[in-house]
Length: 102
Image 1: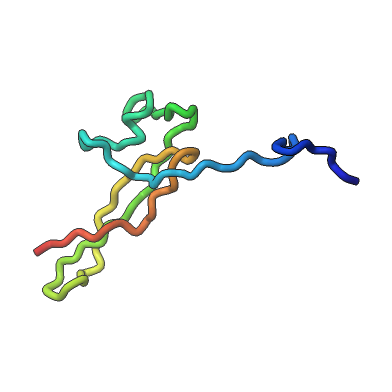
Image 2 (image 1 turned 90 degrees about the vertical axis):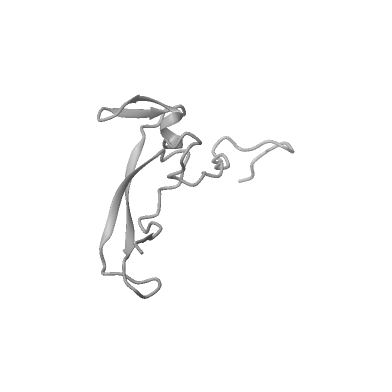
């Protein structure tokens, strides 16, 4: 069985190329979450991104470096909830940047 496809055409059953997702958890210039500035909705109710997808949230843990030695701490973390669009953005990494306490 051969498909009769003209040059430059794609068969109907072929998936479209996925566009590259941007990194999730970015802040806009005004300090708000970028994905929320592009969305409609209300806090504690829910947001819908301008692509039509419901905005999700991911938990990010920031280790607290409070030891006298570099890059070390007591094991405590500060947790943050980060919004992202699952269609347009990558899910934020659980392992956040460290907080230095000196």
